Length: 335
Length: 136
Length: 146
Image (cartoon, rainbow over all chains, first blue to last red):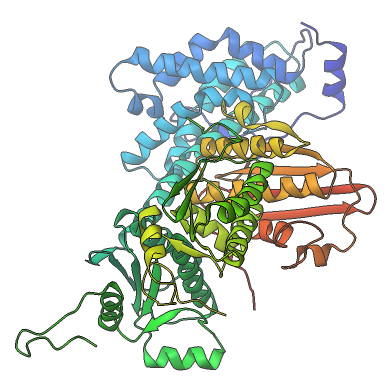
């Protein structure tokens, strides 16, 4: 292997990365006793600790995977067969070895993790579904470290103490990074879910109603923020195309306040509808809001407004040439 | 699946007194400019009174194409022909508004059929039809 | 990610035919990254405006395309660079209605409104670089306009 002199340079210059998640202490098995890293004497050939760890991972792939298969995380996720758990464990060991090989033990974006990201996501999702908090999942991930560390300590028992310590440190960094990757993946799964639900909620909150042949309306209820306005605009304009609507009514009776931002969004929606060949009417501006708007100096400018949804519908029907008459009066036209 | 890039040809169809121009896909700037020139000549030589530009097949309108559309309408108007831009997609309309290009002088319609109907109406400015009242 | 290789690109901007390739590449890249139709359209339009600036005012140049990530967000970054005369008065160039050539004066200022992040560097006589970034599923910037 092409490392040797360069390796000892890295060694002595103290560039060995320190674990970022705390001192090298851990629990042995079910024992509550905290144990220091065992110290051993005797020497051996030098490699950089990272590459030592890589070689160790490759040599002990089978044993590590076997031990992991008995850990709660793997046991709980791969319930069907132990072999499956062992295979999954091997994939994780391979990923760690690959990351060590690239000397990126502390880099959660290391290419080596790409292959196991999906598997880690599956594992953490399945644990969360079982009711575990993210912290508990993270603890289960942390529990993967001691078995590997024990193997490493046993294997490097003959080495000088500082070498062993450096290797243990590297391994702990690597395992820490694995934990970060898994938690990151779990979080981003959660974030993706939240994003999807937020969009769904926005769509649900924006119903488009076909009032007449060629007339659609969106009754808006609640506060209009930037994201919601965008959804409203898209929904309304898509309805104009789908329903072949020449008129679109935006009813803001249920909107508590109209500030300059909301006014701007209304004007944009009206302008976009006009470019498509439809006319947009804004209805339901309550007197109090009208007053505020005047006070704020907000000018809806070119926007066509009507007091109520009924008035807006009346206007659109009139424009379409539809006369509404009361049968009793025998044909008095709607204003 | 993507339209042929830079279609160099724009089909122009004459239907009675109306020219139907169908823009499709992604146009070279030069193609759009050529169209602008050719249309003026065609309006005069064919003696049409209306131009319908169908842009339902256009995926983006940037400020360049927006300007070409506005200028075609202005030129046609000088030659006593009315222009209607038909079938703009929602995404394109939203983007144009965000870009700051509301093209106030342009008549618009939902589709070519609505555009034809609009042009068949008497020239007297009424506020019926798919277009807004004209603003100064 | 395997899509990165399909997104990353460096396209020349030397003619109005190149503008068509720029638009098509940005469209495909944005679709691959999962941008919605409206956001795709905004990004392609911004790219078209900026590429035309590069061509008309910068005397030609190039567009570099790269996918970007920040936290859980994915986005697309486009960098337009030329070695043309540069922009003397950036503030003015970014204001609406300003135009130094063809167009409706929407070039830089208009493109800025279509993206989430916008940076421009220009040295008189040494060229202009405009870098824009948009993020998937992020609502449009809130702007404090008068």
